[in-house]
Image 1 (spheres, one colour):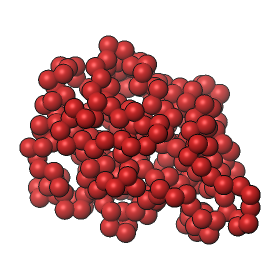
Image 2 (cartoon, one colour; image 1 turned 180 degrees about the horizontal axis):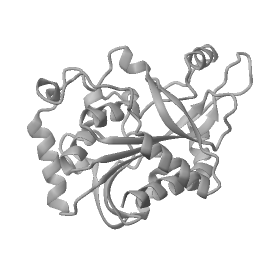
Image 3 (cartoon, one colour; image 1 turned 120 degrees about the horizontal axis):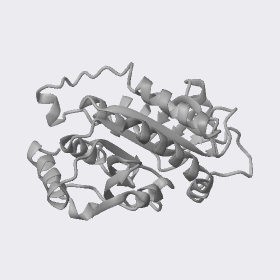
Image 4 (spheres, one colour; image 1 turned 180 degrees about the vertical axis):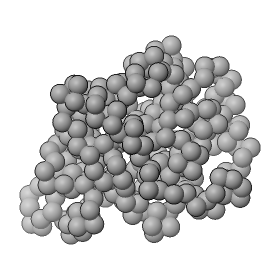
Length: 279
């Protein structure tokens, strides 16, 4: 577990590279890394230069911070994230989110690649997350468990009924409508990975009320809400989850990355539009 001093040290390393204040944190998942390349007046810091920061090991995750301006808004972007299935703890996965809080963000926008459970979804859809099922956290993998932050205020008992900010979701939908994008809205379920789900698991998760399934996001969201940071999260539907056995179809990580060609401009347009509304 990290100490307060370790978070502060990482934040100071970043401050030593740039004095630019930041308002919004961005966590850019599979395929959307390239949006960080469009940040202007930027300072780039590899994760390896930040003490305590875990390193990305998954293709499609660059593994660096990008700090600068996007749509006139001062941002700090995670160009790639780390995951539980890479062997990291919940605290390691969310390390940079706590550092973002020390840097002064008040809003966190996250994107991910997800499998479509909702049978009306299609590859290339963008789903605004309005709630989640923390399958991994319910089994004990919770970043608030035993955290140093729970020894004092804020309370470890974080309310989750308003996790995904209503106004930010509305902004995203308005941006989508203006861009002629049919944004979906629904429930995201977080599983550990790295294997994709079996057909029986797909049917079970769908029966629980989930619309999309992925292997990230929820841990970061919990820490952001623990710090009082507003959250907007979106899933890019990269594949339709397979719910039948004895089929020649199979899901692959390459399929996920290939779908990014369709999803990147759509998700980028929404993120950019929301950022314009936050200025």
